[in-house]
Amino acid sequence: MSAMSMSQQQSQAGAPAAPAPADRAVARWLFVVSFLLLVMVVLGGVTRLTDSGLSITEWKPVTGALPPLSDEAWAAEFEKYKQIPQYELVNKGMSLDAFKQIFWYEWAHRLLGRLIGFAFLVPYLWFLLRGKLDRPMAWRLAGILVLGGLQGAMGWFMVASGLSERISVSQYRLAAHLSLAFVIHAAVFWTALDLTRGRVLRVPSPGLSRLAGLAVLLLFVQIVLGAFVAGLDAGMAYNTWPLMDGDWVPNGLFTHVPAWIDPFENNITAQFLHRHFAIVVAAVILGHAVLVRQRAPQAAGAAGLAAFMVVLQFILGVWTLLAVVPVDLGALHQAGAFVLFTLGLNLWHRLRRA
Image (cartoon, rainbow, N blue to C red):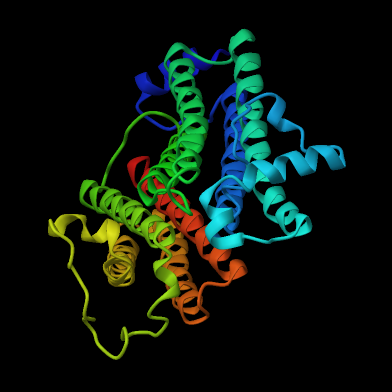
């Protein structure tokens, strides 16, 4: 039975039906892609935390897949790095071995991006040519593929911002790069859930569904705020909790003119908003979990997982802050954001297919 005929039968019946074998195969592939995106996001976080992102100063989509293979090639790469402000103002005098350490992080991040591209493109073409995708699904996946290509370009656009006048990448481009990664993941994961649970919309509890959507939106905003914290190195200051330098509201908030740019330029404001918005997000998710348990018990398991994860992520965020953002905790915190976002998407989708 074709994927299209299965979807048509399901729509006509108005009741859930077991997904077609083709849909199950496509869903499994997309879940694997989502896991690769998790690894990519965590590796990107490590690259940022180790200040490795500017170690490769050129964008070579094809030949850049190969690392330096000789002493001469390593020396040439190091010379290119010595021409940018980060070396002159931050790492001047570093050894070749130290350069290799940051180079490998950035190279691995870029290589994984290429591998994810192949992991998406090749199976997509195979499913398409074998007739396993109906027209709407084929176009949806093609759109995700385009987003993936734009993400590669966005990554270089971000790196380029730190090669001439800055010692790090633009926090705006960093936030855009991370945000697009989460948008791509949401599209991939949601599509996999559609193929697993069916694309027919059935919302017996619209209020709970809308609240779940709001929770996902708030999570996304919190992730963007976290990107600005990372881009401004705001986590390295005010490493106390719950007070900031002994105050609930520290001095130095909203000092930029105009004031609306302050969250994006002022590391004090960036951290203040990120740590307090986390309380809002946690309250919404925990409150929603209580309502789901009362009104939609069929989704209580998914809500419970999201509630557990938001508490764990909150604790991890505080721990990371108090420890002055070590690489391992910072990467784990970013992974936690990805997992929590995924669980939020799963709950929202579950309530829309209940």
